[in-house]
Image 1 (cartoon, rainbow, N blue to C red):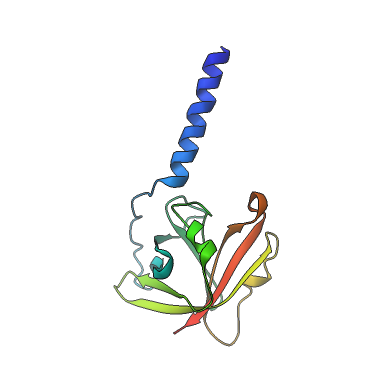
Image 2: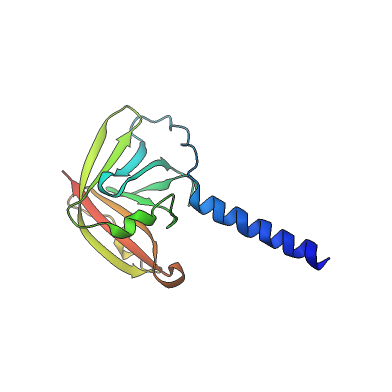
Length: 150
């Protein structure tokens, strides 16, 4: 019985490690032409599909907040782990279903508490993109980038 239980836990651990490191196929394109379908940071080698389902292992999640475009995803090697090396001035490109794209320049990078939602507050002056992922010990904090259109 103990051997069977050990084998089960080993198999579960192997699956979780595989899920964190193996890229998954792109998600289906949303039907709305104004819906973002891809997010990329060329300098970091990030190119991911954008989904509306929460915290997916297949890409980043998109949620509009007022005039802000908010994207977030797991801090996994196949998702946003390279985002940890982001720098002010780098470009984020959002692709849309109609084939168009919008370029944003990272203006700020900060680490905030996982309970701090003030970074998501809508702005009244300009559209801004917010991209964030977990960081820190046991992923308790959030790495947040704000970017403005170029």
